Amino acid sequence: MGYGRRVGLNVGMCFDRSLPAPFVVEVAEALEASSVDQLWVIEDCFYTAGVSLAATALARTSSLTVGIGILPAVARNPAVTAMELATLANLAPGRLLAGIGHGIQEWMEQMGARTSSPLTTLDEAITIVRRLLHGETVTVEGAEFSMREVALDAPPTSVPPVLAGVRGPRSLALAGRVADGIVLAEGAGPTYVAQSIARAGNPDSFRVSVFTALAVGDDAKEMRRIMAPFVAGIIDGTNPAPNAHPHIEEIRERHAARGIDGIADMPADWWTELGAIGTFADAVRHAEALADAGVDDVAFFPGPTVELAREDLAHVTRLAAAVR
Image (cartoon, rainbow, N blue to C red; front, side):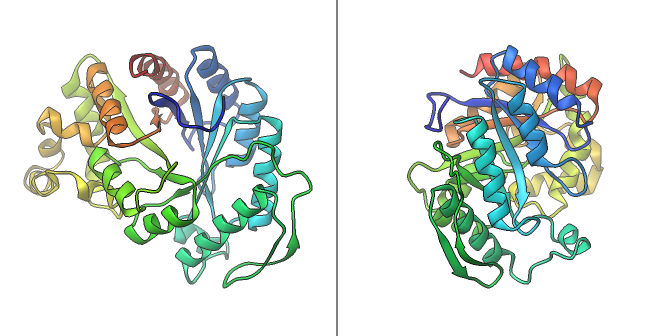
């Protein structure tokens, strides 16, 4: 499997940060056995680490693509990040996708790595990593990082795409200039995806990967009630994706007037912008709408426990077959 855009949508599953590290072996092997395209391992401070999870998943499979979502730009020196990514890419050519983002600034501050300019730092980090992966010798005096004649001894023969895990307009514009694509987190519906691609400048050969919520069952109303608190959290938080929802003001009015109940009984078509939530057919419609908006890869977030994740593996397998 190479890095060019595939005909159709690449379907995968996220490995939630709450899941125990050894479980990644079972998930990766199950996804590959079911011919699912991708596994995305989640790195959040201070849970499991993306590089080691990715290495394990790649070592236990032979065709599965593994994405890392996402590495904070300042958590590692970009030369070390490039070394890690090059090693993974050489171990499993054509099967790695690498996401790098700002990182949650509160977490960065906790470990003494907060930057005064997240945008500049991300620009420098992605630029350095991509140059090193492409075999360049890098000398740079930046605002955050300095390098003197740094070069990888074994740059990868198949260079993995470096995707920017970003949200805001300025960060998306930066991604369009310096990255190979973007990773959009949960809450990114078709409208927000289209806006994000436009804000990135509609660059050629730009990869768009999306993480999305998954809650599938026979009773659509029950699934929506289960996910209503999730929706309430993202519409009141800092995630800009819900602001693109065509009915966001009405959703907020419903929440203000009736709380979770006001969200749970929203019209069915409003949920298409929020996740794969409802029946299996609703989940397919969500995935297809993302593809129509320009998404290349969609990774579904399972439930946060091993038991729920095992159930959702079956749903992801069915979705991968349905949207090809």
